[in-house]
Length: 459
Image (cartoon, rainbow, N blue to C red):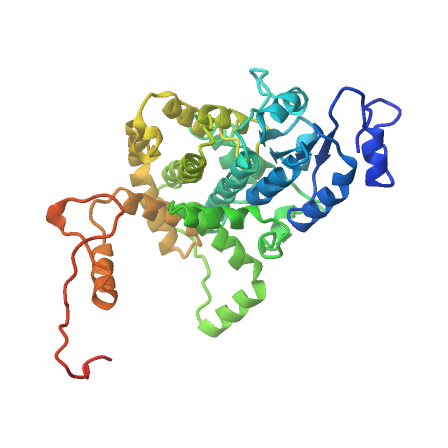
């Protein structure tokens, strides 16, 4: 527990919860206890042990990656005794200790008012000097937006890793040359100040004491989701599905990570198939032109990661009436955050600043839609070339398919609807009725009328 910050002693270790609560007690001021621990049971146990030693008006500030529903349960429970519980999303990783994190607190307005001076003093600041923190809303809203932030993060990381794979395996660039490509992209209008591209430069350049690229010996297993040390990606996928928001990039990236973790299974599956997938060098007419196509495709895919995540937040926000300020949320994410992406956030801030109903459905915003449509030829060329060379691009290809089915006015689900009616009497709408809302249809057709005999034609 940090009690005093001075040159001599910065950390005071306490022997018990009782001693901790007694040491930080100050007459006339509420105690603020900050947690940063694993989600779930550890948090429950910590709150249970703290509770007998807290008083009305005290505040627990949970800066863990906690599930928002757990946060709300604790808020209700502690609120009976007048104790505040604030769920605060924190982004930036352990290195954010150097320059401050992005912080998204949510909870009771009275508690947030008390906490904001503290949070502003430690949060990241960019060139404008504004702290990257702001009250998100009531209840579990702070942890909720951080959860979806991490879903966006997973999508972005998958896109960038797939692009890196194309550069190094398809175009056969060296790690150093791939770093140069990423560095150049990170200076362009669309992708400037994109943190995950920025660190890809460092990672591709870094060598060990013997002069070898460290990246070259990193195993391709992402295990944080499978071993349950990180839950936010899984929760993001569950939320998208629960709210019926087609967050294709986020879900695809998560499935990719889960598959990567099971290396033994991948090896066994490859051996059983007799045809293990191996990337081959790509045959492109102009490497420079293809890299430019790939840059545009990267922008397209990363922008869709944000759009999908923000649509999940919007749906939950409307249900809960949190009244989230989206320009402020983007401001919170614009420095100190893992998903910091200057060009993308500039575009989205313009969209949210408009007094238009398209803020409810981002893909219907004319400027945003035209931007994405203009990138489509480059995306298609990138995907086709990558597929021909057996590149592994689940999230990039999902981005393309998502755009296609989301902007299509005629889908093959016409047959799906008919089959549902055939075997389940689920009913359907007729085309001439022009009903566009997601409500059950009124029509049923007896595709195979009963004739009082067994069906001998069924396979």
